[in-house]
Length: 297
Image (cartoon, rainbow, N blue to C red; front, side, top):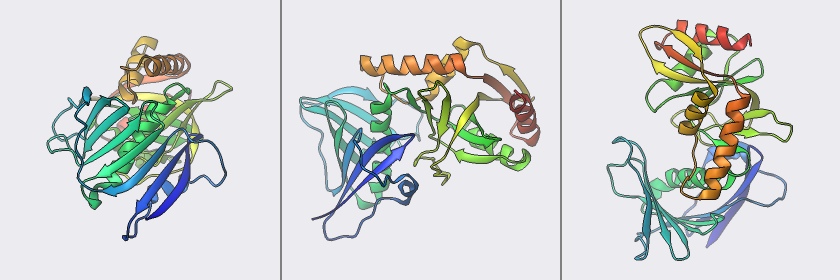
């Protein structure tokens, strides 16, 4: 049985993939290539993937978290077992699980099993995003649900519920705000550095938009996008900023240590950052109003 083992660095955090191949050529998906680590170092976690076979939930598994989102969203189910954790996943929550990840107690080692070959990339991406969020929760790092544009060396993060218009607003910036570029369109990483600055990093995970840039920029502002018939931008209070960052960040709150780490990081970012709410239409004027308010600060 052949194995491909590679390390990756995302926002300065290292993890390892071990891709197993038995008679059928496989490769690690191309979205990870820009993040390949060429030096040695210790990994936060390791995922062994490529096992294509049926799976069955352990008899002793106890449900810890079950997906309760709207129909059409991905399915994630988390269960505790005697020796660790069992995670089930599917592209949408209206179909049965298509993959499972068996993880040890401290989330450092996982074995990924898929029911079909076509689900391998989906399962690998979701497994990596989950373990990345879990293992960096206490490392001044947030994995966030956001679309990010960069202008004049500053990153502007657009936050909202799925389907509300984050990607559309980023596109309006790219089309109407000269010098704007897209850093990530779904899952950027935010990290507080040792000198106290907050930076936004690209990641291998960018939703439906293939934007996998191993780049970063200092955080300029976070903006909550809300649909409206008029375009208007207003600053948020620190408690309001905490709330939108909390709701847009990934993590596992039932584990006290992770919850404390997330709270510490979110609090620090809310205190340090410029946060606004943009009530807007999906048009060029919204992007111009937003950029004029933020980029001059």
